[in-house]
Image (cartoon, rainbow, N blue to C red; front, side):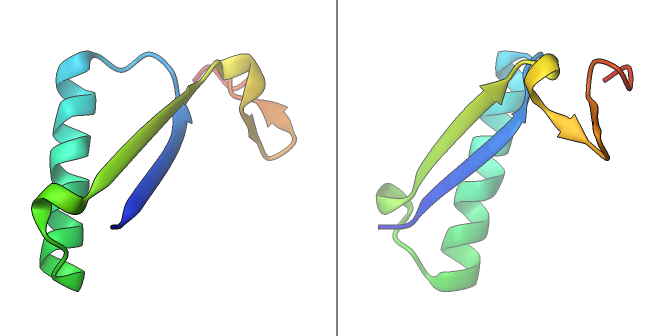
Length: 63
């Protein structure tokens, strides 16, 4: 059972997250032949103040 974990800055809508879950599931099915029903996707949303990029928070960078 493949488990795909994604950490990303919070703020995307439900439709975008659903599209990501679908695309990642399809990628696992296509690339490793995983049965679709066995694929698990976990989305971890992180506040932009808790996400660092190049030594600055994402908030500092306007993301």
